[in-house]
Length: 75
Image 1 (cartoon, rainbow, N blue to C red):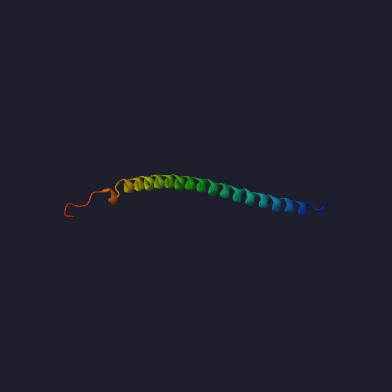
Image 2: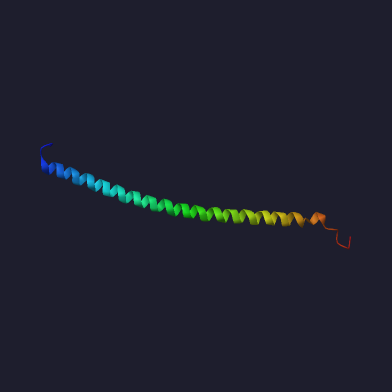
């Protein structure tokens, strides 16, 4: 096998094919990772907004506690 140029060329071609496939797969994974990071960033921002809104609503609910209001006049 060491002296057979055709076998050596076939092996080199196979290795080049594998490397090309791996480079393509790596590029796809890199793109997917970039998209996932963008999506995580969007979700993180949405979570921060939702948390802030929830905090504001809780503050409003505590400020408008019905127990703090005087009884209606007919009591």
